[in-house]
Image 1 (spheres, rainbow over the protein chains, first blue to last red):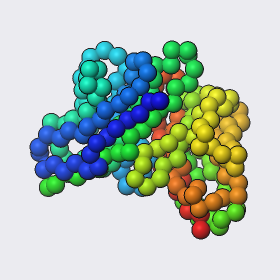
Image 2: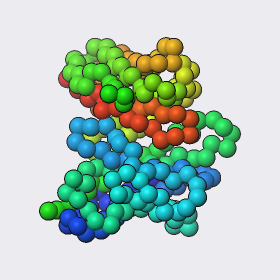
Image 3: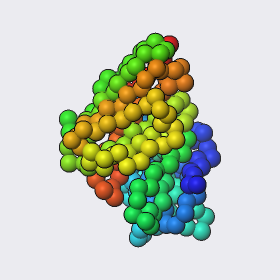
Image 4: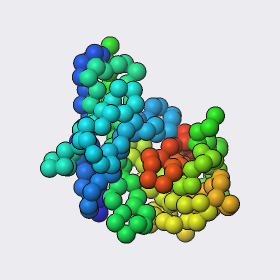
Length: 117
Length: 112
């Protein structure tokens, strides 16, 4: 069964400092990896995805994520945090679907990012 | 607004009543998903449609839950004989094949 682990319930970072939100995954075959952000009382907003190719993926709002196959990780990063980045961040994974059938997406439990002014 | 829209945004119902939620996906998206999210958890997959066909259902979707997507456009999720454990945020998402999903703002259900 596929799974996602987000080991930190909360990450605190000072405004202007770099931030990292950690994610590790387990899946059969090649992974499709995603990061979403959720603001209070809102739905999830897509940030970025890794399907294949360059291990460093760039996404919305200056975020990027690095795929590391050997460590089965897909950590979310941003060089300089903004107060407005404070939100709940979800990592998600799905399998490759070799048979062509539907492969469901499994989400982590989320990491709350608090950027301190 | 061309995003995914869900109605209602909030629903309070008494235990044992039936409720129905509606989701209008992004018009060109052929895939539609329903998820459930409880406090402190990530979204959990409930069911998936490709066009009007319901192709996958989670074991979380008990017999009291039913989803439809007539004509491959909007979708409804009905919960019969609601229980307190059904209280959650119900999220709808849509996507093109192989692309990321776009989520609606969700319907928050409270069963009292």
